[in-house]
Length: 219
Image 1 (cartoon, rainbow, N blue to C red):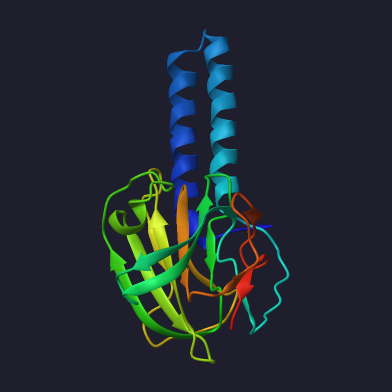
Image 2: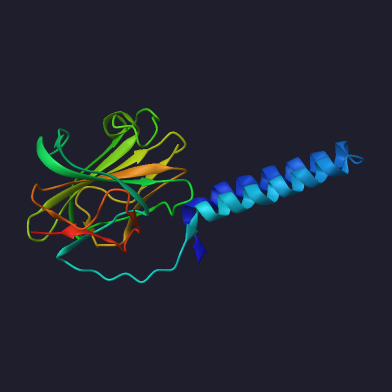
């Protein structure tokens, strides 16, 4: 396992904070042994929490042009037909994956193809499971068209804790299934909008792994 590049700055700031906090406690509260040990334990726990959030576990990926792969680790919270008004402006099958702070937060391309549309939206920070978060929160929208002509829209959505969305794609890019297209810090959600009739291989509340779990099949 390695640490994702998006974590370098946050980890460095965390270490600086821990060093300053412990130095202050050691200087001002020399006689309060219990307080010093409490801060030591707190500092160690904080460092581990931040470190695990930015972990990048080693995985073996297999590309399959007939499959749609889950773009993120987490739990399936939505599988339903809905109206998509930003790009398609018609009915689509929505699949949403909620990422808690303990999940790996790397986002991966669900299919290979060409990026036909990209847009970043500043917005609110509603809880990621709130239905309005899909249209009101800070988010990005990416549409990738498969070689067979099927377009799939996927959307990074910030949550109540997530305060930074990172993306690595732009319109016109040729992307490869399972390669990283972005990262979201500290709790978030990814929505996918698929053609009606797409065969879905997931169930509600199922735990999935990005780049590994097969979400559905391309027609």
